[in-house]
Image 1 (tube, rainbow, N blue to C red):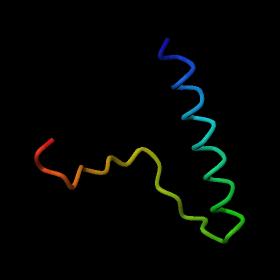
Image 2 (image 1 turned 45 degrees about the horizontal axis):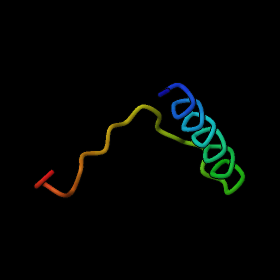
Image 3 (image 1 turned 30 degrees about the vertical axis):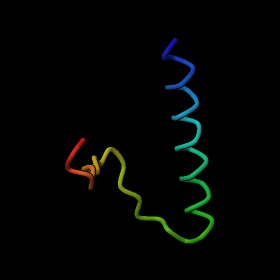
Amino acid sequence: MGEPSKTSGENREKMTEEILKLMGWNNLLKGVDVPCVNKTQ
């Protein structure tokens, strides 16, 4: 059940990476965790 979600997320990451490369953003960081700004969660 979670596998389709994982696959679609990975596909979106690839698409986003390609769009950013087209815009000239070549130094992409992968695997970086971004902490939640809402501390109540």
